[in-house]
Image 1 (cartoon, helix red, strand yellow):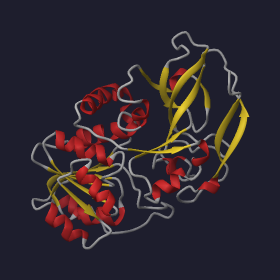
Image 2 (tube, one colour):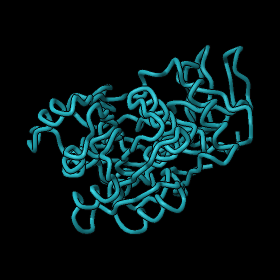
Image 3 (tube, rainbow, N blue to C red):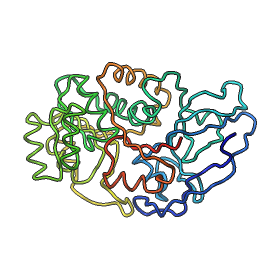
Image 4 (tube, one colour):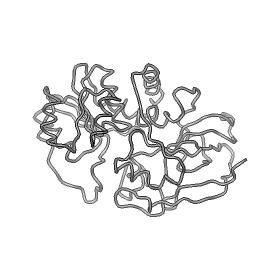
Amino acid sequence: MKNDVNRQVLLRARPTGIPQAEHFEVVERPLPVLTDGQVLVRNSYLSVEPAMRGWVSAVANYSEPVPLGGVMRSLAAGRIVESRHPDWQPGDVVVGMFGWQDFAAVDPDAIQTKVTSAEPPLSAWLGVLGLNGLTAYFGLLDVGQPRAGETVVVSTAAGSVGSCVGQIAKIKGCRSVGIAGGPTKAELCRDAFGYDAAIDYKQGDLDAALTAACPNGIDVYFDNTAGAISDAVMKHLTVGARVVICGTASVSSWDPVPLGPRVERHLLVKRARMQGILIFDYANRYDEGRVALAQWVREGRLRYREDILDGIDKAPDAIASLYRGENLGKRLIRIA
């Protein structure tokens, strides 16, 4: 094999909030040796997710934390270069939980899907056709249950999940309103992703902006932030509204649990429903979601943007820069 070194990004220290570059280190190790039943994947793209903050936290989460000294957990896309399993062959293009590294020796159950088409490109399988698009698809349609003519509001609306939510809402005949940080991202919501209205939460009175953008109230709120943005949205919920809890990006730490305005009265008086979504609960339906998402992409009804960093050395700071709002599109690291 041409490259006999495997660069890996390891978790060197456990952060108390958003992981920074100093919490990781890049090391070089020999190529992994396969055992029977395994395949060796040469990664091309590594994914960067807001959820990674929870994956490295010592605070209880929905998954076991990445161990200290362990390879950073992540989705990746690449090509099988060696196989000791009869169902997988060298040359197969795959997406799965392969981690932040050049090469991954994995059991087949780490593979989420085999990519058999060049359209959309491989990178899209980590974004619009990956967990981000699938989260938007099932979160909005299964949990939010939008109906044509309703108003759907999305926070972090220009992000890889939020941008898909807004466009799916439009496909389903809804009015879409995005909340984003800064004029560039608000403009992106309108011009690239087709939102009917976009609000820059950093400018002016958010409550007044919501009143103007949502004169008939908010029927579905897709919440990626929690915090002050979501507090402002709650008073605009309609009777029977649905709130989809997808992320809590504005909260830097949950230990101790931060206290703020109470939402119970809004949910009670408006007979509204609030429900969380973890995309891993939908693993047996991924193919269903990907078929619909891919069709919309091919039809030009679902557009996406990517923010690609080149080189595995960019990985240590990639999560922190995501929370600093530096990306315009799905954040990826290209290593091959």
